[in-house]
Image 1 (cartoon, helix red, strand yellow):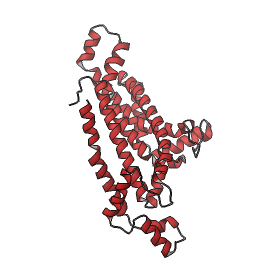
Image 2 (cartoon, rainbow, N blue to C red):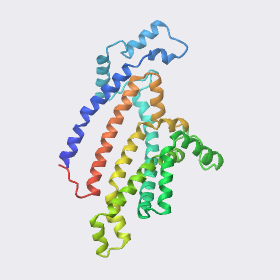
Image 3 (cartoon, rainbow, N blue to C red):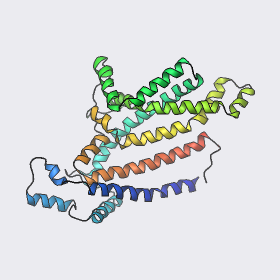
Image 4 (cartoon, helix red, strand yellow):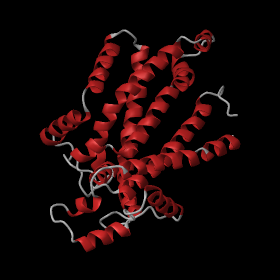
Length: 308
């Protein structure tokens, strides 16, 4: 087990270098002058422009700029935004906000997928199953911004159950409406995966054997069926968690959430290379660690899985 974990962690190195190099190259190749974009309509003097270009090494070749960034990363310095703020501070302020949103949304998605998917599988072909399949198809088909506006109008404006926007005060309670929107929009795929997995598991020999031994359904379903049906749902939820941490840009924009998505969107508009690449670097590490945890969970759910 330790050797497997060490091997997976060592795989982070080429993934880290490759991802940051590619993203830095794409940012480097973007047209336009990021210093001019920083000042908007009021352009700086040539002396100030040249000083800022030299300060951020924008006058250097691509590999030199990347080397400055890479050496800064190993010193724990992710760079400075063009507004003069440390990228470390920006990440520390925005990642917890998006993290809270992602945890709430994935938790809601996972619970709904397991419960509704299992009930649909146990009632295969009946009214409940058909209704849930139609509903999941609707949620898959609707764009996320449509679900956001519908939730704001009905749940926030009409029923006044939630605040329509989040803003600067973004504790756990303020995140419920956007978390519900994201959870509902993501749950449809996981629900269908859970339904298919449970149906497949119910037809396995060990389930028939459990019933033939006289075990009650309340014992067979949670112990023998659910445990072996969760792997595809966990894999999908882990992927969704990584996607949300990268930034649910549309949702964060509509609900005015000062998270990673909003910050990354504005950084892209302003060509802020250090911000974009630093955020992507953190996301790569999070993706690798989340996938490692998921792989280890496979062994707990299915004892037949062994790690070389």
